[in-house]
Length: 238
Image 1 (cartoon, one colour):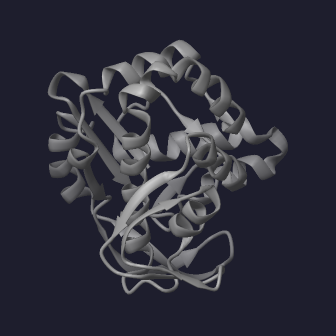
Image 2 (cartoon, rainbow, N blue to C red):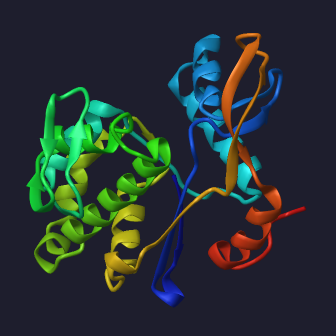
């Protein structure tokens, strides 16, 4: 997920990049964007190499520079949600959790880390599959922002940052950077966060890693060129 923060306009834009997005990776060719991290890490250079490869893949796709990054894993995400006291989410319709063998009811509810993780991972029971999952992930990002940006939590940010740093696997944000970012966006209404999926369409193509035809999200770069003017404030590099 790519986030663009514009403090001058009190605006945060979130771009969800499908894991099956077809991109060109150096030394591999056209393959899925989520292979960038996995292949770099598997090359024996460690997790940070995977981070850098993923950042470069996103930067190349979106045609923009990425100033900051944060990487976590499932355990870290779950613990982070518990650390901030859970999140409050309103569902328009019930959602079945395939791997937890239960259904989340419609309406307002409070979730702990385990339930939130199950929710952001769920796609099999959703009519729109991965597209719906990405929208649900944005819903949780909004819920996290609501939780963190209330006055009581803003006052506790230094201690909260110390705690959540344990859940971050890799980042170039210092504690001071995190504090500055929080204060910068404190006036933003989480409900007004703009969310969009990277434009494209479903398709199938040959994958050089498995030497077989796979499902892909084929990016529409013309549509992204137009959309990025709105999201990033200017046109991407051609």
